[in-house]
Amino acid sequence: MSSKDRLSRSALQRIAANYFDTTSPWSEVTDRGRFGIPAFVTDFSVLLVNHIKKVIPQLRQDVERLLASCLEEISSLPKPLEADPQIEVLVRVNAFCDAFKGVVSGASSDKGLAQRNRALYSIFARDIRGTSPDFRPFEDPAQYVSIYMVDSEEGAEVRNDRVKIMGVYDVRKTIKESIAWELPGNIPYAAKTRLINQFTDLWSTPAEECLTSINDVLDEIVQQLTKTHFGRFRVLQDMISDLIRPDIEEHKNRALAAVKETLGLEITPIYTQNEKDFENLREKWLAKYRKARRNPGEYRIRPVVPPTSTAQIYVSRAMDREVAPSPESQALIYLAQAGYRGLTVDDLSRLLPRDQHFEGELIVMADVRA
Image (cartoon, rainbow, N blue to C red; front, side, top):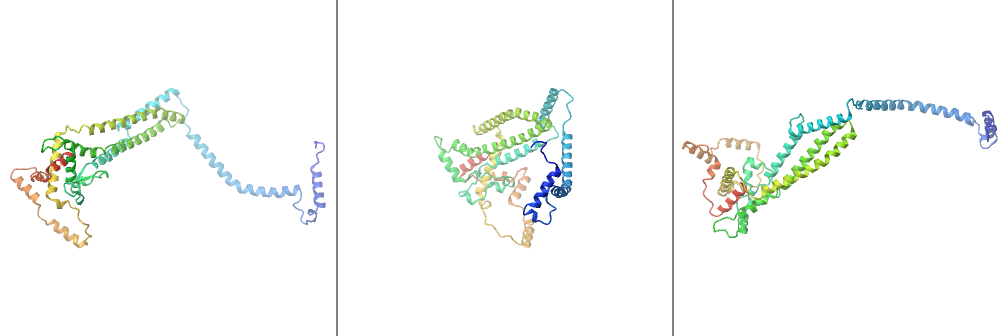
């Protein structure tokens, strides 16, 4: 239909009115207020106005929220660079390097790396101490507590689950299995090395776990410094991270190789230049093992005793305060009066006679533990 043939609005309304007046069922409807385009526009306009009134407050809130967010993002944009971009990058790289050196050396205000690594070193030292041999100088070691539990300092250690409890017969068996062409009365050196290797072989796991934890701390520190110094320019931050990541991984591999090499030196050969410390520790542990052989009742596992009443505990503590000094304390007093000052209970243990049946095994235990 061309523009000339188009009907006017009044003509269309007459056609619609004639249709509704003559066509069933519309012609039979009494209420004719909704028929035709004008009636539709009137009713729909009311609905549309009511709907707009309902949504305008929410629309206003959304617009205000989005506007505030946009203004905040605009305000957070970095200021335009005043210096040459190359100089700016160089300054930031130097600042990053200086900050990293300060964190590693502990000279900066951020002591996080040093403090976290010191905590990891303490855990590592605890785990290494937990691999020390658990010698119990008795025929049936399972019936006795560990020698180290009697000493309050040693008893606080966390023992490695893979450490084997060994008694005098276990050590004797190791000695017999190591005998070759030694002269009579000589304990094979191979027996001691076998026993030492039983716990030095446990060092690799805590050492590598410690190194892994240190590497994790290093990654966090580097990521934090990278964000601090290059976070203004996200593309530059990603590029710097990609550049330094291969170097970090290379140094991690070098550190792991160095740890393994150091562990190898600790294991082979079995030797120490701390001869004085070794002799002192050897005498100390030999005295402990001899004392345990002489007084096995102090180390025997006792059944669990039901808790006593408060009154019984009070009476027991009162009696403990009235107990006379131990024989060891009295002996030290008399020795000091005789001129032998500075002695301890461990020194008294060295006066115990040799064990006629297991002296060799006790010496091996003391050598290995030292």
